[in-house]
Image: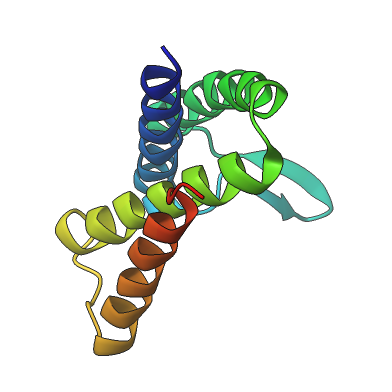
Length: 117
């Protein structure tokens, strides 16, 4: 059950970020224009916020059940790897050698994190 919840959290968080990025293509969702708050809410933005809400509830559950020093680096690294891949495939952002080396270190850190004493 724990692996399923961790996986679900990572996927929902990553999906929320991707959908929010898609929703921001028409401009930022919140702006102040002429001293007035202007909301530019697209369907993507609304779904992104909803997914972030689900993500937040999963996050609270996970941090209540696991050591912070374990669950936060694990989930953050996994989300980062998914977002890095999505940014390249969906948004056509660039892969650089430095970014690839960074991902390597993240994966190495995950391996060390999961080594048993």
